Image (cartoon, rainbow, N blue to C red):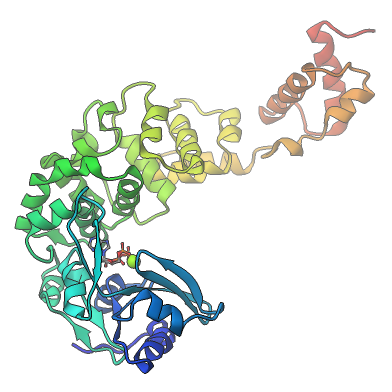
Length: 399
Ligand code: ATP
Ligand code: MG
């Protein structure tokens, strides 16, 4: 098969040229070639070569080009793009189901492609657009199938993360997992215990944002893989969310996570603990907490709308409700959206001769709530008057 290179690939051709000029082989590889064949949008372009990291360093050594080496992968800049260039390799024995204990470099492209996870991820393409397909990946692409390169049992026992990656690609591409690969995923699932949560999180997040998360989740339920996901013991029952997952993700991560967690039956008061198990970013955690808290309220008043703030867009995209538009309109029309929009501050309270203290915070928050509930207008004059009044209510004013 020969492809017409897209602009993005063409911009990377000088990198291949540079390696070839020095007598090395160089190819585009992995996901970008798969996506090019499928006509999908391409993420990063990865490159593979038989030049070793130190040979590459010689070639790309200027600071403009070279950003260092990690585990046999060099990061090279070229005309404002980053490229990861990895030396052809065969992985040594896998000891902990994740990290090959040794990496051996090889001069043969086919050896490098053989260590890749799935046949549809094991393509290489040269700068003329010629595709190299040693493992029948094209057939599997045509049949929309996820199949390991080589024996699935062995490939999953080498690296159990591949089990989750199978479900991730199945969801993203809307491809079915080949029956023998699926069976091996079930056999090897216990090895997922050895995989770092961060890696599981990353694959699972991509799974949730795919076009068909429902099929992946229900298969993961059927073969018991859900019992190896972080926090699974905090769910009442995994059946509901995993077998009837509605619609597609294809949205931002926060929206997909809120949807997933809203539909999961978490044991009561376990939300914070559950999120911690996934080791996600603090920012995402906060968005999920605010959204779930908001979505579980029956009557939503202006204080709730103010409290959730802009995260309302995430919450309502994740779990649309009949009154979504009305809630969004009410949110847009709130008298204020940020604390500093209150037309009165601590300075003003001082001019009222109110002695400084924690009571300031209380008064300002009280005033803010009244403004939000449209009990008073957000003007300085009215707020000053109300502050005095509030303060006397607290019984500490000196008249
Ligand atoms: P994406 O579009 O999400 O980046 P991708 O196919 O490029 O998808 P990456 O995780 O970026 O996936 O990995 C790049 C390539 O490296 C894969 O296409 C595959 O060939 C290989 N690869 C990645 N992870 C593994 C793994 N755990 N085992 C074997 N090969 C892997
Ligand atoms: Mg990639």
